[in-house]
Image (cartoon, rainbow, N blue to C red; front, side, top):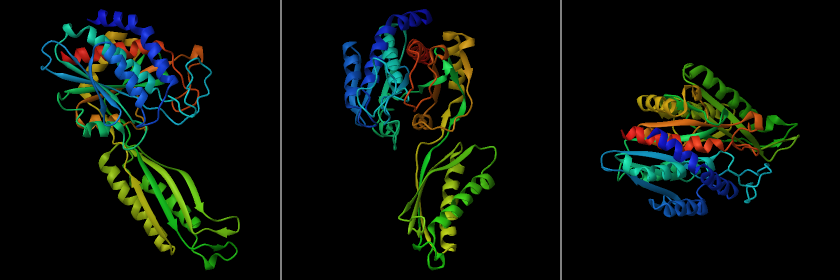
Length: 394
């Protein structure tokens, strides 16, 4: 089976590369993946693969049923949405939707899963059980397509015993993959703060209630909240990336200041406690200085936890497929992923797919306007996903 999957991955590589280039040239923003979903469904239909569309809007779900298909089900997931970025690459498959780009590699995820689906369909008489292939919308935007697909019942009828997902990783060369068991990626929350005072002439601050001064105190205090109250063994990041006054000038104290930031951590209990503490600190400082504060947290994706036993098995199977020299251990990441919702619902393994090639200058990070991949990674991505599914089915 191992050799056959490798052979099919090589055979289908040029075809899947063409699909990836089409998807890259026609990116769509989160929850707007209408044409992408139509394209995926058309490929599945052409290969004779059972599927349904319109799941949580633009989601597509395919089923590959092997012999004794009721025995066990394993799920594979890929996301389909793109980012609001103007592409700078000068390639034949450059984005034709100006200002929208597959800068996070979801075109790679989708095409690799298409390839894995095709391989599994070809080999369906050689394994027992069912593989559910989930093509998901909206990973880049809250509330996250994964949460909506779960609410729509994607993990039922049949219910998978485990789920795998992969993500492009430019620091790793194409042909390599990386794994990390246990807690792997952070939760991510958006913070919106409005500090209210009373504006006036900058030369007469005694007649005002200065929201700029209040905001400065709040920012410093909130950073100390992380350093003084967080368990130092639990990674936490609090970053404010935007400060705007409503009104104001060099000699005018504004009425309001608005702050926007992100809070990330690796522990759900501390996450909840931090929300409470931040709100209390900000409101108390504003009140003590004669003003007021509206502190709102838009709760984002949870902590992504890779099931220890499942991830250990997947790593071993990756070594079988690629060789030990092409499988590495990964560090923690403070970035977030809505695959975390799947990891909260069942045993899950989210791993990294190497896409870099320094000799060819393919090194740009994700979420940049020059991101691209060594397309040899597609052969690795589709083959390994198919192999993991077959091995987990047993």
